[in-house]
Length: 216
Image (cartoon, one colour):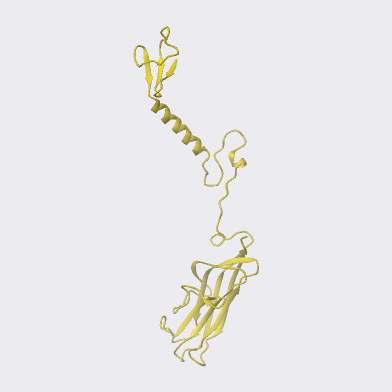
């Protein structure tokens, strides 16, 4: 028989003296005491095990309960993926490519569009790679004779407003951190021939990414 006193200590009786039932028993005299803390630790461990039972596995399902009607069916858990990092269903990939003659009649030439992409109405998108190359000779990388920019509706995009070295190729575009773009925006790669009138040739450019249905 077990009796719990007002302090939470559990007493296990090996024998029950007459008149002892109904009052608090002190420790000793045929009575074995059990520390309530040990009982509480066991209860806490069982609670943690029950919590783990409902922990998500790597495949987003739950540990089976053995009842034939798992909690995964009753209370499904979804992992929301960012569409600009993981292309969602319904995406439309694009790989815009173009070559234009380097402007060299009047220097600085101002911006000349090499290649552009317009995000369809009702879609958002991402650019995750681009390239540009000058095909003529005599160009020194980083000289500032040629300056390339990426524009969003005519406005330079931060970190892409002063590109003075070639990036990737048409065959192998240069990967970049996802550049998010939005419905109806026009993203363009432009070149400004600033100096060195002897430069003559074509400028190749590309924009690579995908559009996806806009998030509501």
